[in-house]
Length: 338
Image (tube, rainbow, N blue to C red; front, side, top):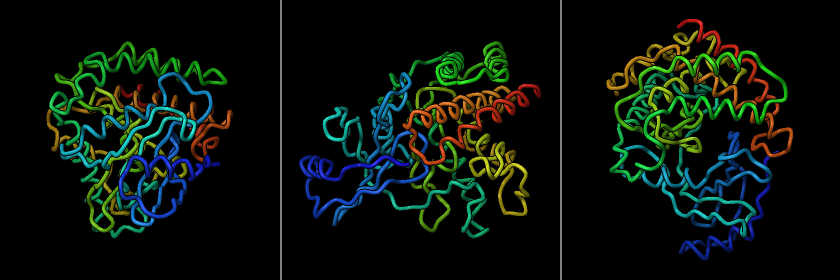
């Protein structure tokens, strides 16, 4: 179940920090996330969003709400659509964990990649907007945004492979030969990296984008927990993995569907739209897809671990956690196409 949030201390704290808030506070959880619990805060005259660390024991470096806050605040005015950041509170005195508060953005979020309810003429345009928004993020001047120290330049894939392999060892209940094969192969087959530091979102996918209420454009990129300085093709591969390498009952993916008949682009068209907007990025290789699937296998195993301890942010965490084995197998399939 989603964790509860006591409105009284939140209301008292926010009224002392943000001028003009009126009336009693109503709080309700925002569904869909598997990481940091997120809540809609409704005052009489204003809607805000609060995002917090989960309670309880957590894996090292996970759920860094301060990094989420920092990168979104830095991106304001860059052309990358992000909510306006209002405040960050790192102490546990108000709600028991660190949290930040941002302005609420009105729009549509889809956890089904078929974009249900969207008129057919808009579906391809929304995917093109998603690709172009990702390219816009990767074009941000890191130094000008004040994010030169947001991660270490160079060596991104080596660090990521080591990190996620270590997280697997911390989370996994049973051995998995596919994960071990992927970790070893990826470490031995890292391609040349990009020639300049880039902000990598880390979880860029349709479900983490908010679209305009009626127009086919992105009005906010959400869930920046995994953001760092990194490789742009890692973001592109991650988005492709979540969309075209998962089935409808696996996180609402498109694998196995007639995407053309549904008015949706295929993976090649999405890649092409991104690379037209960001020609510096180069081609997406089997390595990048294998890496994306490996990393997501580890992430889903972590979701299952949190479900076992009662710290999962979403009600379907135990079911989603079973995807770890499936995605590791698909990662091996991608590896074998190299």
